[in-house]
Length: 95
Image (cartoon, rainbow, N blue to C red):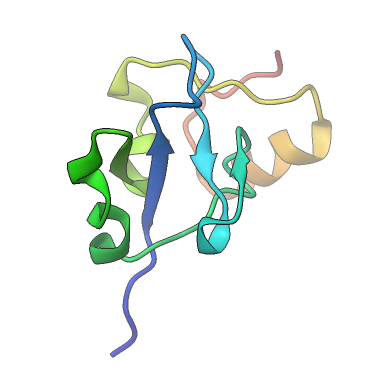
C-alpha cells in the first residue's frame, strides 16, 4: 500500500501574522500557495518538528473551515474555481 501524502509542513520561521508559509515538494523552497505546497507522509512531515521551526499539519485540517485562521488566495479566478470544484469550504473568497 502506498504511503498517504496528505500532510503539509508549515514553516514557523517564514510565516508571519496571517501569512502561512509551507514547504514545497522535497523540502525545496517555500510557498504561500496551497496548490504548490508539498505533500508529505505523516512521518516525513513530523521528522523535524522537534526543532521547533516547523509544524506538521494534516491537509484535511487546513481545508476545514472551522480552524479559525483565514485562508488567503490570490485574486485568480481559475484558482478559486479549482478549489471550489474540489469541495473546499464555501468560506474561500477572492481577496
